[in-house]
Image (cartoon, rainbow, N blue to C red; front, side, top):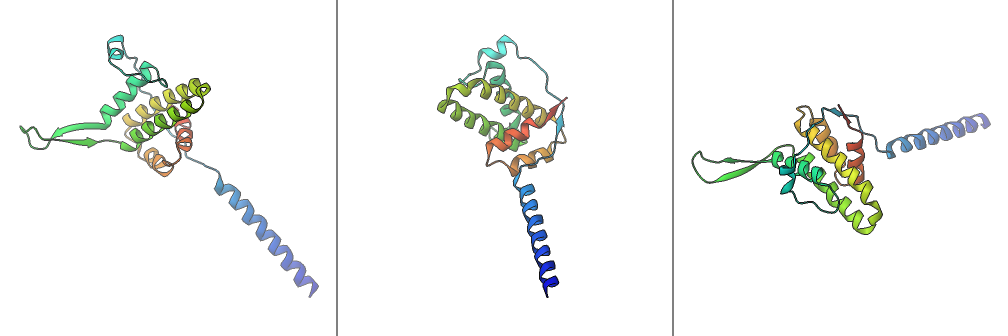
Amino acid sequence: MKTRLFFALIFVSLFSCLTVKGEENTSSFHHPSFSFYEYVSKPNDSDLKNIEVDGLVDGATAFFEQKLKECTFTYEEMVPGETLRRAVTHKIEIYNAVKNIHKQLKKDVEEDPALRPQASRTMNMVVRVGLAAFYDDNSGQFEEEIHKCRKDYKKVIELFKAVVLK
């Protein structure tokens, strides 16, 4: 009787240890790594002249954010020769993630102005990765990962930081 009780006690304690260990692994955020070829280009002064810059991003980052928007939303005629046009979206998950991160970082900077330099660097990195992912034909899984963690902008930023730009 005592041996059965002893083995039952060991079995229960072993099972509880394995359960706690499994819960620890599932609580952390893990995402696969991605790599894209970077869109390398510098805007000239005439390109930057008409770009609106807010307090968070510089002119080049705002320029590339605008280019991402222009690439995401294209317009085509519904009937050739007519004036009716419809908007066609491409890789909307990437654009929405960049836009949401910009909005959230702007709120963070309004609450604490000392975060401005770090937020500006983060936004620059996010826009560069967003453009690189947009122009990559194999960004489907990256877009799925963005969609999975879209509710928490900090997780999306971590996903963008994990991308390797070639």
